[in-house]
Image (cartoon, rainbow, N blue to C red; front, side, top):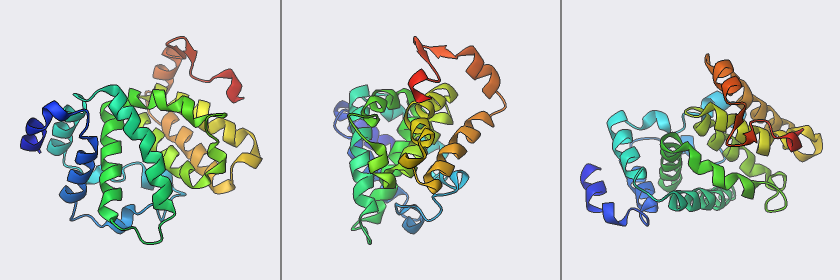
Length: 219
């Protein structure tokens, strides 16, 4: 990957998709069935958080993270936005044409969120009405929870804010979310608060960048 990244460094803004393809091939020894979306155990967040991060060797992650850190933020934001369309397509495919493409996409997303968690922030406004009605695409709720869980592993505040601003409103009105999705959403906040340092971090940053971690409209 070092050679791959160095050769393509000048094209870093257009090659995010290439890194998906790379990891699809690099993780060819991993069973793609486990990662075929929708996931078999979508109701247990702890089984989802490290998909497929657990299979990425640390040296490879560090090299890829260095590559991702060179990318323009907007390039990564556009890629994240496009991934929702991909996940929706995956959910509608009984047999995916290329299972490794799903694995590569998830690997790339997990690395982006764990390397540059703030890239999720510009996407959040587009997940709210009137731009988008997440409750109308329930098959994407687990995917959204998984994304926010990736971010929460490295940025508790952003993980909490994204949960409160996007997912909590779905739970607030029981008609907007089915019981399984509601349970998964609540597991995310449990995961955030289970961090031993959560209390100190969240209280210190209750207001960040002039925004409350718990936006008032969420209630």
